[in-house]
Length: 196
Image (tube, rainbow, N blue to C red; front, side):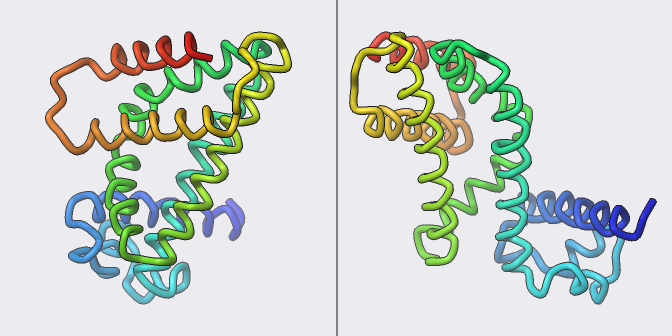
């Protein structure tokens, strides 16, 4: 293993430890020392990777979003040629992603709530929102161009899709749900797809 590989692996170990600590104790109660202990690294060693807990908190979000949404999901989705099927799969994938990556999405709930008071986190979330709406809008426009969807205001539909996905996410983590999440997401997807 090269020095670069070791550094990448160590950073991933820190992210994994930080995710566990933030989920167990919350941002305010989690310390760099707790994360270091969980990651099996000295507290001083942590500062070779992150200058502060806040930097780690922000980088953890960006790293996981890139990993799950930009790389994993895009690679899977763009193997599907049919734009209607691609959008349907993306929307239905929401419930599977929630269950598969529950630790990260639980972390996101705190990250998002902090964005209500923190300008830097709000900026990161705004960029995430714009990027996600842009992806949805592109997919809707592809469907319109292919004759799969009616001619509609793609940006407004993209916002509807974003809010639908985020609403599912917030509901899943903020209440004791009394329904099957996969069935509900499937219903929502079919409802929206009929409308467009």
